[in-house]
Image (cartoon, rainbow, N blue to C red; front, side):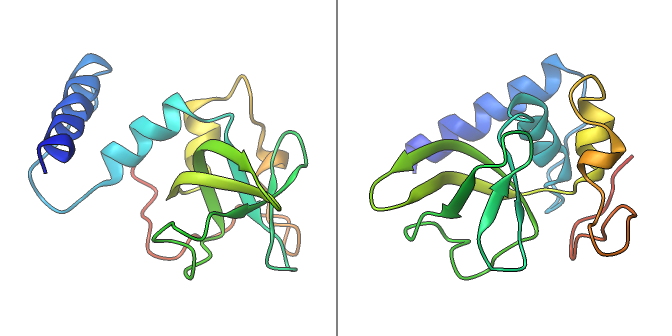
Length: 132
């Protein structure tokens, strides 16, 4: 628990440094956006096959079985590291809203990078507000 508290304190410090408002409510959007700002190049999108593909390098990856999101399969993910065993696995993952990528890293992502293939518009990510 001490480690979790240390990480939380560090994240709050980072939010202060980049001037993102944080609150004590259950709204974790500012923290997710801060993580997205730091790891925007580690983005993966769920494919119809059930596997993930990294957005910029088109590499096939999967959520590591030890992850709490292993059974959930969110449409868009940010990961901290890739581990290769029998397959390429993403570890330390969070669900993101793809609109954040364009907002946070317009120099790296364009709208076409995060377009929903079927509808050719920005996808609706279930459960995540856009938080502008």
